[in-house]
Length: 112
Image 1 (cartoon, rainbow, N blue to C red):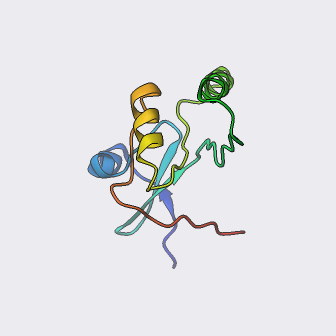
Image 2: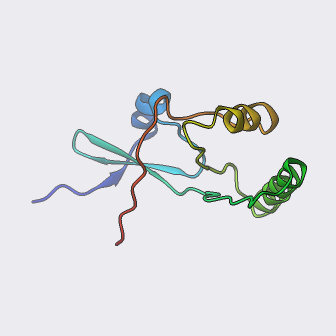
């Protein structure tokens, strides 16, 4: 008989917590020795400023964050070009963003 995919036990979740960026929107799945993190992610991507002034961009982001908070979101994700150090520093210092990837990586989409 085939094994079934199941939710991880609290102990199994703790085993991977340090390396998994777990949030309240995650579920940890198990199949035998394999583990996967299923993340239901709120994402702002792309954000296209079209040359808007920086202050207007920050107000826009402030408004988006309030909409997300009001709808019960606990976090959101977005991408910044790896070569744009100014933008990276701005979101880290002004929005308290935490960089999750330690190197440039490719982003994929799988259509089901």
